Each structure stands twice: as C-alpha cells, then as structure tokens.
Image 1 (cartoon, rainbow over the protein chains, first blue to last red):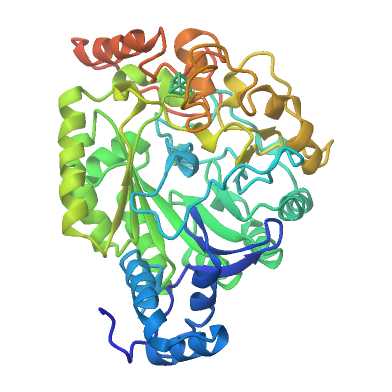
Image 2 (cartoon, each protein chain N blue to C red):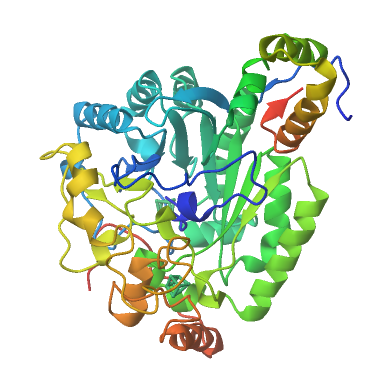
Amino acid sequence: MGLPAETRPKLARGIRLQFDAARDQWILQAPERVLVLDEIAAEVLQRCTGEADITAIIASLAAAFDAEPGEIAADVDELLTGLIEKRIIAT
Amino acid sequence: MTGMRRKPASTVSMDPAPEQLPLPARPVSQPVEPPLAALLELTHRCPLQCPYCSNPLELERVQSELSTEEWCRTISELAMLGALQVHFSGGEPTVRQDLVDLVRHARDVGFYTNLITSGAAITRQRFLALIDAGLDHVQISFQDAEPNSAVRISHVPNIQEKKLTFASWVRESGTPLTVNAVIHRQNIEHIDAMIELAVSLHANRLEVAHVQYYGWALANRAALMPSRAQLDFVTERVTEARERYRGKLVIDYVVPDYYAHQPKACMGGWGRQFLNITPSGKVLPCHAAETIPGMQFASVREQSLADIWAHGEAFQRFRGTDWMPEPCRSCDQREIDWGGCRCQALAITGNAAAADPACAKSDWHAAMQEIAATAVDAPSLPDFRYRRMGAGKH
Ligand code: SF4
Ligand code: SF4
C-alpha cells in the first residue's frame, strides 16, 4: 500500500472527468489524450473531489458495491498511484 | 503551428493510463466512428517564419478566413458529431481577435480546449481573458533553447524573450503546459538545454518533435534532415531524461520516419479520429492532404460537417483498408498503422495510395533512407527558405 490514508486525491489542473454521450462511456480529458475509463475507474474518479480522503473513498465504494473495504483498497491504491505518477491525479 | 501536426495521432503516450483510445472497432452496422478531435487552423497569419512550418506553401489569405459566426457554428457541429477536443492552431491563432469568444463557445459546448501557439503575439490581458473563457491547456512551440539560434530559425528578433514571458503567464495562471521542441539538424545538439527549458518552465509535458517533411519542411528538407548519429544522440538523451524526471515531466518522443522501419498510424488512421479545418473552412483528413492531387475538399461553408465526415470524397478515399494495394492489403499490421502516411507516400513515391515508405516492406524504403543520407552528406548546408505569404510560389 503506497498512498497514506489521509491523502485527498483530486483531478489535476487541466484534467476533466466527463461523460461521453456519443460513445456512452466515462472519459478523462487530458492534453492530447482521451482516456477511456472502465466502470470501476469511473466510480473511483467521481469520488476524487479533493474533499474525501482515501479511507472515505474506499468506504463509499464499499457501500455502493456491497464489498469489503479490504477487498478494494489495493485496487484503488494501484489505480491512483498510477494516475498520480502520470500527473492526472493531484494530492 | 509547429512542424509536427501529426502528433495528435502518432502520440501513443509512452506510458498509457487505464485504457486508451483508439477504441476497438464498432460493429459494421455503424461504419464511421465519430471523430475524437479537430485541429482548427484559425488563420495562416503568423509573425514567425519557421522553415519547417507544416502549413501549405500556398498560405490562405486573411480575406478568405471564416468569420466568428462561421467558426462558432462549425465548433457546435463538431460537438454534435461527438468530437471531444479542439486544438486552436494556425498559423498563429492568437492573431485572431475573436479567439476568446471561440474558446468560450468551445467550452460551452463541452470541448476540451487546447491552444497551440508560438506565444509571441498575445498580451497578458488577452491571455488572462482566454483563461477566463475556460482554456484548458496551452502548448508553446520552441525553435531552440539557445536564443540566437531561435532568432535565426523563427526569423523574429527577441523571440525567446517573448516566449519566456508568455510561458511565465501560463505558469502563473496554473494552466497545464506542454512545451513542443521542434528538433532538426540545426538545433538537435541543444536537446539537453531544451529539456532543461521545459523543466524550468514547469511544463507537464515535453514533446521532442522531429520535423516531418510536408509543406515548408519538405521545401527545406536538405537543411533540416538530422544525421543518424544526431538521432542516436537525441534518443539517448531523451531516454536518460525520462528516467531522471519520472513523475515530473512526461516526454513524448518518436523516431522520425526517415530513420524508422515501421510507419506510424498517421492521424490514427485516415478519417478515423481527426480532422483539420483550414482558415477558409476546408475540411481535411490531415493537414497535408491538400498536397495530394485531384482530391476534392468540402467546405463548412457549403456542407454540414456530419455529411463531410461521413461521406466526403476526401475522407472516403483512404478510410479503412479497402483502398490498400499490396504490401498493405495482406499485411497483419493494416489495422494498426493503416498503411502509414498518405502524404509521405505521395512525397516519396509519387503515389498517395502506396505503402508509407517508412515501412520496411515498401519498395521505396531504401530510396527514402537514401534521401536522408544524401541530405546529410551534402558538402554545404542550404539556406533556409523562410515561411512567408507568397514565398511558396516559384
Ligand atoms: S511559422 Fe512557425 S510559429 Fe508560425 S505557424 Fe508555422 S511553425 Fe508555427
Ligand atoms: S505493409 Fe502497409 S500495413 Fe504493413 S506495416 Fe507496412 S505500411 Fe503498415
């Protein structure tokens, strides 16, 4: 586990989360790139508002998907760690 | 703007995030996918005179430019078509006095907006108005990190000062910045300084863009072609810098076609993801498409964009794989690189429907390498033919 639980991730400046109605999918708009999000990534990123910390994000996902927080923590950490390295998520 | 307009397509990012477009092909019932992005050449006017400019030799005049209303209508049509990003480019887009209105309109209809600029033709006040209007991202092109060389390449005095000032406004505004360093034989040795420049400007991304030989760059090819040794040098420096600035600066870099053995999926495939609109409203599948003889380009003044995208003769000509002759026709890469670049095929082989000569399977592959070798071995360096209105005609 890399990210401290009290991190409050948010989309970096210049990155937008958007629903792409023409293709019926969630996307991240980034410079020169459009990243297509799978369902889980879209759910995680909708919670990255800068208000909620990692613990709260995991709790909210666990409630929404009726899962154990422990089961999703590693996935959330992996996703966000990758996006932080790409400067898509800021902390 | 810049010598590397194929970039939106050929930039497959170095470390892709979750999943990346291009999307998997749709079922046959829906043959033409909506475009992802459009490059809007608002004007061909530009205070700079870069000899590698990718604009056509025959520059469009100010009198023929689309009006504010025409651009706004076009941007709305693009959004309805399903495009997601617009790149405001040129020429120099900031010489259009209505740029702020166009950016605001693009944001209003949901676009991710990118400004591709030299940074040399805008005041701080107007830049802040662009940010207010919702501009998402700025890309500044640099001719060199070394000021005297930048002056010589752009043919504008004090160019570096102007660009650095502009870049400082971008930084103060917190807007994400891409530095586009166009490299070629006459500045390639300054690669380290260009990387440091991007770092010092707090850029998020650096594009180290080899010149691509269309338009003015083709006319100046002998003066711009790097040698194999220069290429290896820059590749090594970029690889090293990527490691050093991991997590801080993303560096996009691709091997230039004349030294490559595999073609790039030009524009992500002809008529698949991108379109380019010229100052007067002609809709092109790629910015160099006008070099291909005998093609009809429809204008947004006469036809709807949806119609042009789906049925336009120019878009249909090389869309998909049906048009391909051998060796592409039976090649397993045909839906990956889509046969490479049509304009490059034309420039080297004389036939726009041939396989891109950057491909090792092309009969012209050796000839292309020969062109590079001849340029590099020439005893004297030709003078630049600068990009100017009217200078494209002989
Ligand atoms: S002359 Fe230079 S700055 Fe102007 S549009 Fe061409 S490449 Fe861009
Ligand atoms: S033969 Fe054609 S499709 Fe195959 S790799 Fe070469 S350019 Fe691409």
